[in-house]
Image (cartoon, rainbow, N blue to C red; front, side, top):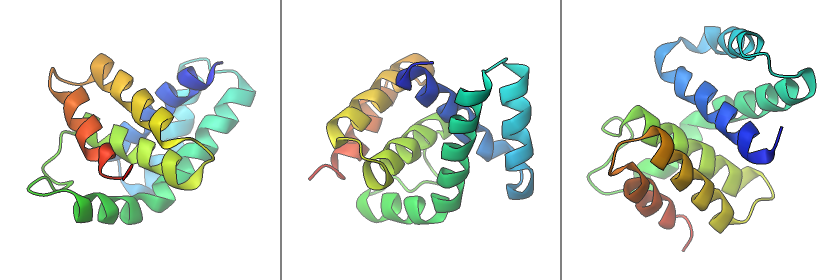
Length: 130
């Protein structure tokens, strides 16, 4: 599985966070990975990254809320918010260049978001690239 494919699967699981309780997130992620026949090595990598993101959600959201005006996390679309959380996590806690994390999030926004998602995601993440 390529890094892009792994990232896309992580995004899908992070998105599910909005629909499940915190206690159920790990189990839901494991169910998702099993149902989608993701090879064991990739599944472990995806699950580990998702759990790390879930552990940092409050911190990530606080950072997002601090840097955005008139767009708190509670107002953002769940797709956009999930992509922003993922990219911000990659920028902060992984050895990923900020531009790459932003570009990957924008590409996923084009695929899964609305017509304005890519611009919105890019604009929010640009605030973290300063």
